[in-house]
Image (cartoon, rainbow, N blue to C red; front, side, top):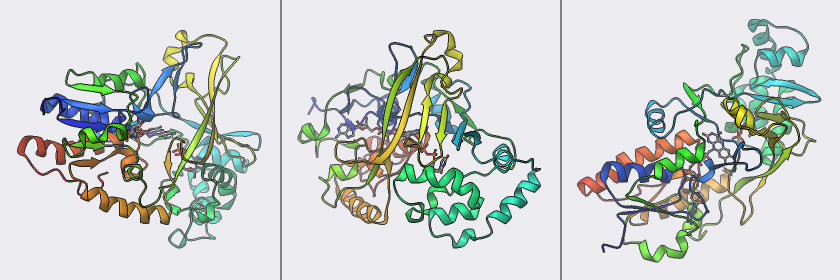
Length: 394
Ligand code: FAD
Ligand code: UDP
C-alpha cells in the first residue's frame, strides 16, 4: 500500500526521534511519528518563557551527560553543547551544603576540618553499625555507606518526600550509586561529557526530525488510529507498555512530579540552578532556577526577574504524567507478563522509558535506540530479517 509509511513510531521523545532519524537518513525509509502531545521532544522538551526569555524545561530539569563516545558523537550532529557543569546544593536546618556528599559537606556538617583520611576514618566509624552486604533496604544501605547522622540529615527526609514511602521499605539499589567523595570535587555527574544544548532542547530535538522522509503528526494518539497501521507496517512503540495491552496485567506504578512554575521579582533567587530541600517538613523536594543553566545567555534574560519551579513528588494516578518507575516487586511481576505479551506481538518493537518501564537518562535512551536500530531495524529493512521484539529492549 503506497499510502502507508515504511515505519510508524509512536512517541516523539529521544528514543523515537533517534530511530526515526537513523531509518530516514541511513536507510531512506519513509517514517511517520505519531505524538499525542502538542509538541515533539517528549520529556526533554523546553520553551522560552515569553516574559523573561529564560528557557524552561517543561517536564523537569534536564541535564545532558554521558561517557558513551558514540552517543556523544551522535548528539553533536544536531547541536553543540555549552560547558555547563551541573552542581547541586542541599538546604538542611537553615544551612546550605554542597552535594553530593564530599569533604566540604563533611567538614561543614561536623563543624571542623578533616583531611581526606580523617574523613574516611570518621565515616567508617559512623557506618559500622550496618555492613553493606547485610543491608536489605534503602535505609540500611545508606547507613552502611555514610553512617546515621549524614543519612538522617541528607537522605531520610528527602527520600521519604520523593518516594512517599518509608526508606526501610524501599529497595537498596535506589542509592547504590550514591557517591561519597573524600575530596572537594562537587560536580553532580561523573561522566566524560556534559553540557546543555547551546540553542536549547527544542532546537536540538526538532533538528533530529527535520528530514524530508520524516513526518511528525502531533496531537495524535496512536490508539485512535492503531487499526490503520497494526499488522500492516512495522511499529516502534515508546508509550507505556501496560497501556498498549489495555493494562490487562494490571497497571504499573509510577511516581509523578508536580512542577509549580513562577516568575519571581529578583535577578537571582538562589544563586544556582538546583537546591534540594533535605528537611522532611518542607513539602517540596527541590527548587530549580532555570537561568543558571545558561549563564552565557545572561544578556538575553529580562533583568529583575527569574523563573523558578518548586517540585513536589507523589504517586501518579490516571491522567498524571508517569515520571519515575516505582518498580516494586508487584510491578516487576507484572512487567514479566507484559514482556511475554510484547514478545508475541507481531511487527511491534517496544522501546524507551515508558515502553520498557526503565528509568533511562537521555543518553541511555539514545544509546538504546541506536542499538535497536543496529540489531533489529537495519537487519530487517536491509536483509529481510524477521522483526521480533525478543522481549522488551532496553
Ligand atoms: P519520552 O521522552 O517520555 O517520550 C515518549 C513520548 O511518547 C512522549 O512524548 C509521549 O507523549 C508519547 N506517547 C506516549 N503514548 C503515546 C500514544 N499512545 N500515542 C502517541 N504518543 C504517545 N535525563 C537525563 O539525561 N538528564 C536529566 O537531568 C533528566 N532529568 C529528568 C527529569 C525528569 C523529571 C524526568 C521525568 C526525566 C528526566 N530525564 C533526564 C530522563 C529523560 O526525560 C528521558 O531519558 C527521555 O525522556 C527518554 O526518552 P523517551 O523517548 O524514551 O521517552
Ligand atoms: N537523594 C537523597 N538526597 C539528596 C539527593 C538524592 O536522599 O539530596 C536520594 C533520593 O533517594 C533520590 C535518589 O537519591 O530518590 C536519586 O536522586 P536524584 O537527585 O538523582 O534523583 P532525580 O534527579 O532522578 O530526581
